[in-house]
Length: 416
Ligand SMILES: Cc1cc2nc3c(=O)[nH]c(=O)nc-3n(C[C@H](O)[C@H](O)[C@H](O)COP(=O)(O)OP(=O)(O)OC[C@H]3O[C@@H](n4cnc5c(N)ncnc54)[C@H](O)[C@@H]3O)c2cc1C
Image 1 (tube, rainbow, N blue to C red):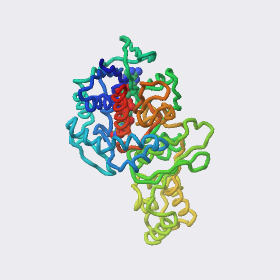
Image 2 (image 1 turned 30 degrees about the vertical axis):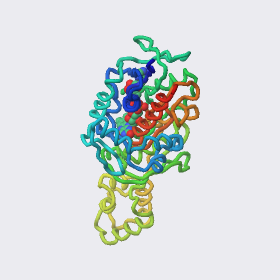
Image 3 (image 1 turned 90 degrees about the vertical axis):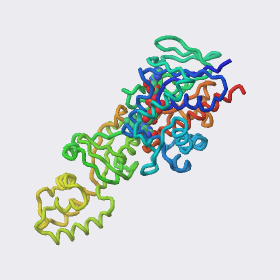
Image 4 (image 1 turned 180 degrees about the vertical axis):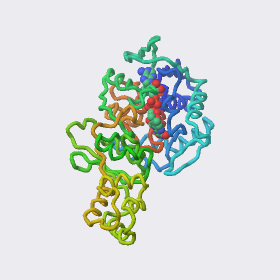
């Protein structure tokens, strides 16, 4: 008797799971069906890494696990069993795409095409997997076996893998269905919010930065809630016109409280992180003394792009002023604005624009060694459906891969 396996959602995690069935099942009898609501699988996967697919990250798993925030300990066994080295081996040897390593240990396919990754996965599983597109799952029930209802028909499975994603980028298909299906089957869902998302500035701050759209620079960023520093990050920031993006901002976005009405929330940007306040003050004093006929904005432009120097000088009240006659008090104010530039936030980052979802099925209800639900035997939950979000750099796809491996290994071992 063949094991009937249903995979709900043909995104990254679902395609990886089907791939693992092909890789690990050998001669064992399995019948794998993917139910995917879109007309083609893996839509979000094709967007990854700006269309190039940052498939994993070659850091040692003891370091990698810290990139999953509170879920680091939960995911550690999965990473140890199916590490980035295995992912690279699978991508190169099984689906046939050579990989390359870029900065910060990020791994991409040499072809630089996320679409080719998706297509290679689909082609790899096609012999063993029945991919049913346009099949939106609306309910799951379990008596002896699983009954899975789609708009078309009802399916019966012995094992089920729930992998229909999170809530971010809903136009790709991941519109929160995992959470609804998990809740209906008795699971707790930790409230979802944006992670790895751009941040919008409040209207006052937009006035200060609207001319900077498209400008990027390295900075140190701190998040303040009710005047208390709650998180910080270092790296590239990008001014977007309506707010901020770039790796350092996106990293912090998961820490912005979901409801900030009535709370004072702002980002503080250190736009010249290589110098302390005192060092910058001393250097500016020297420049002012050496170049009395130069405008302050041009002196500040020694450290930051001209457009940023204009914005900072304007907020500091130094717009149009020359070095000659620039008072100590004005200099201190300029240093303060350059090192502690405030951008107010009046709403939480949008989940629609987030790369990943924070929150999801509670990890307390999932066995971290198998990904099996502790509530319903035979049900496995993987991918963004879970309350796991990784930092950028290939962490989120690696999580899908490692979790898929554990789930498939367990399904194949069941009944042996
Ligand atoms: C723009 C962008 C860039 C990214 N870049 C990277 C990167 O370079 N590296 C990285 O590691 N991570 C990256 N990520 C994150 C990564 O794409 C996700 O973590 C990953 O796709 C999650 O996989 P998943 O299978 O859980 O969900 P998804 O990939 O979202 O797949 C879920 C699937 O389930 C289907 N589905 C939903 N509901 C139902 C239903 N009711 N019935 C049937 N099917 C359903 C959806 O249509 C979808 O195909 C990026 C994300 C975005 C948005």
